[in-house]
Image 1 (cartoon, rainbow, N blue to C red):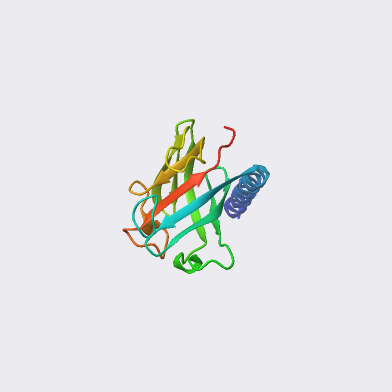
Image 2: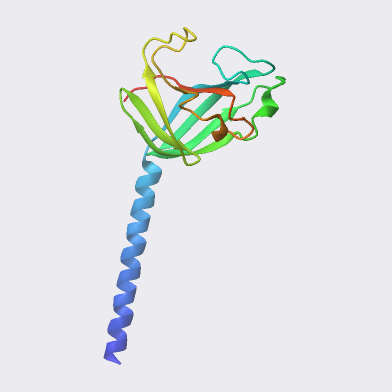
Length: 160
């Protein structure tokens, strides 16, 4: 009987300890501040940054992170005819890491590197942004985009 009591006591202590660890971890996670970064997602069907035989569109994006994980939310613009090309509006972000030179992350499991661009010579309006574009950024990460499309993902500057 004494052996059974010791076993039950040990199991109760382990359960209380494990529950306490999980609760502490959850409290720490919920109290960790999240980071919100804004940017844009541009695409066209020409395969080059300036062009678009039939379609070109740009959307606002919001990257919401908690530690190294989060969501990338694309905001459709009402009334634009190319909104229906993009078939998904929210993407899972993992492995987020930012340095002064680049941002690395995964978008729905696809690795992406956004390079810091001090002087934007393509559009002349995205200085000091983190940018990734075709061919380094595959259009097929975004459902609805075909492999020959041009796509550019930009994140606005933020404090390290």
